[in-house]
Image 1: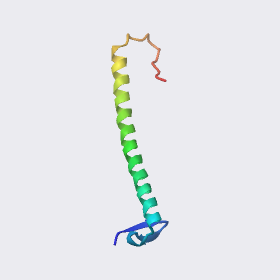
Image 2: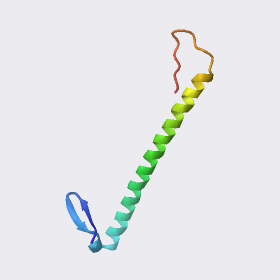
Image 3: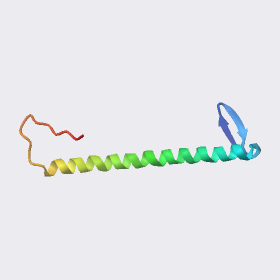
Image 4: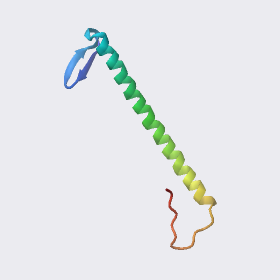
Length: 71
């Protein structure tokens, strides 16, 4: 009998209504998607930093005192 805790109350998932089980499955899907998207965003941010660094390496040297900004 698997249980899930919601608002500090333990529920036996075998005893939930079909509607409650469906909502729980949807909630779990959302949590998994958020985790996946956070990992994807981290990977994209890492790639972006690498591309910015590579771009800076191939740009002409900026005059002293100038800074590069990426919008």
